Image 1 (cartoon, helix red, strand yellow):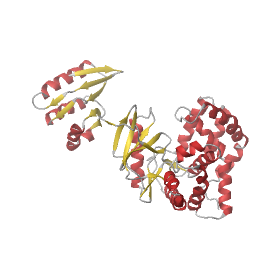
Image 2 (cartoon, one colour):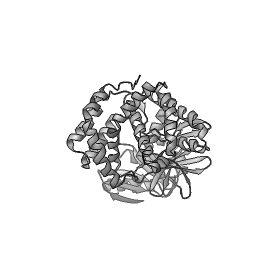
Image 3 (tube, rainbow, N blue to C red):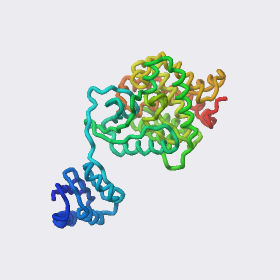
Image 4 (cartoon, rainbow, N blue to C red):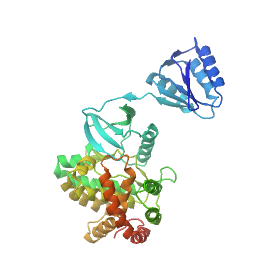
Length: 404
């Protein structure tokens, strides 16, 4: 049996069939390789394995005893994976199926999130293709978060397959004739009130969902990590970074769901109902973070960044204020101008604070040019510094985001 040793990892490559006729020979070769390389991590690459019987499975069990953790078995064909799944070996081993490869050349782009683009493959199917560098573990984490949201009664699309798209990975969803909220509104302006109110109700439902501690990461921890990145890149002085952390420390913690990137370009409409599809940013914390994120993106889109509006929100900029009005009324639970005005004033106060976090996406956001980085550093950073103490005091009273 062929084997390789790289970076203290011994990889075995079984081929063809492993059954009663050759199981003993395969076992001897595999154990000899393990004994010749003590202290290494063991991996089974099953790319060329066509069939495995119970005799072959017993060989793997003996190899598993050589490791103090689940033995990885990678590049498993669908046929061999079915044997593993039927026999319960997927619980005993870390089994990874070989990924189907697809192309999105010529496919319609129907949505964009923070870390990927959603393409329609055919009338029934879409694929969210992640940026290069996003690994399989991150895709699996999003699927786990989506399942968590789904079992908490949130309308969530669940990926049924993971694929390879060029040098990137993608999650595949069955979404018959679904489009983003932004596109649905652009296609039919008469739907703006209905979909705006549905967006508001969905956001409110997200924020009313209590989570058990430890199930999802905290948004405050994620944002602190982003401040660290911005400081390391010398986009913030240590003093300004400390002020950013003080604002985060001042916001009261909550155990409610926070979407992290809620907007019309990553919520789908199917048969008049909304479905969450972009959940790579979902976490727990104060709903306030969703509000300032959505407000900031919309302000940027309506103040000159019309291309960003069309790419990210799938919306023409002039439709944003109309949709925004109905959405706010729903999640605030009122159309009282005084309440809405207090909400807007608070969001405006925190705009520069929120805008600075964009700097942490310098290497992953293609629309963040060196010129826009310098613009944020020369405008939003000093503006934040000037009102930092006011932000800290305001943040302490955010509470349940009650603007009444």
